[in-house]
Amino acid sequence: MPRYITVSLDSRGVSCTARLLEEAAPRTCAAVWDALPLSSAVFHGKYARNEIYALFPAFAPQDPGKENTTITPFTGDLCWFSFSGDDLGNPAYGYETEEEHRASGGLVDLALFYGRNNLLINGDQGWVPGNVFGEVVEGMEAMAAACQDVWMGGARGETLTFARAEEPAL
Image (cartoon, rainbow, N blue to C red; front, top):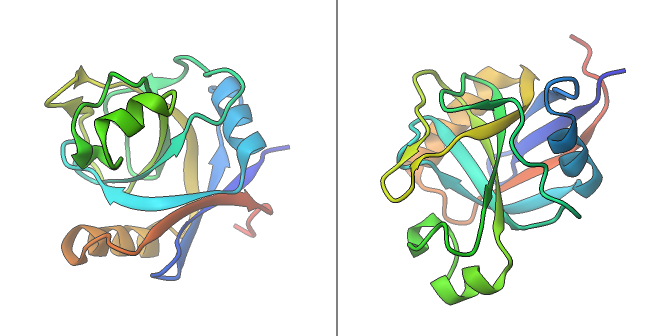
């Protein structure tokens, strides 16, 4: 039986529902599911294009590794990225200081892609493949509008939350 999660922009009061892709990314889905709920400040992608994401201290007992990876996520894809303490040397990525990031043992970036034509290349790191672990099945249109508002209106004070959900009435 498929499992579902909600992805919410809390201050904007908008959510969408995603189905976990457990057959394609079982380790990643298990790591996310077991850690839910997760909530953190939202950021809008600088390089990838139509992406919002939140950063979390590494939360899985073991990193899932690469599975079901892409560098061209599509509208509604949920992706997992793992970064070690030395991967991101610029505080614009969402942590306070480089020392804080290195001491954290790494970060997990959970992202939602809300439009087409995304390309996962980073000016500091080059290609950054992500594990596609979910796909939005309900509420994408309203969520995409809210994500665009994060881009144009600002992310300050907004949080991105991932939580377990019931199967949607599609």
